[in-house]
Length: 118
Image 1: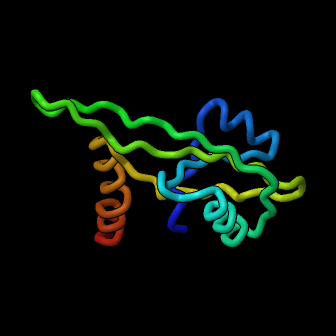
Image 2: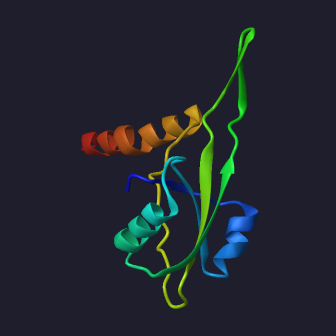
C-alpha cells in the first residue's frame, strides 16, 4: 500500500473505533480516492466516508539553523456497519540493553548449558 503509512492510536482514534472509524497517517500527496481504493482493495471493506486534515511538521533545530520535519495528512476512514479492519501487529523490538541481555541469555546461553549437561 503506497499511500497509507501507519495506523494512529491516540485517545480520539481509540474512541472513534467504537463508531467504526479508523485513523491512519497517509502520504501528503495522496488523494482521498486513492486512499479509498487502497483500503477497499487491501482490506476488502466498504468505505462510506473519509475525512482528512493536514498536520504541520515539527520544528527541528540543527545548530543555528532552524529546520522542520515533513508535514503529513491524517485520514479518518468510516466503514459500513458489519465491516472491520483487523489490527496490524508490529514485530516487537527490544530497546533496553537490559531486555536485550536477558533475551540473549534465555535464547542462546541457557539452551547451550542444558545441552552440555551429562
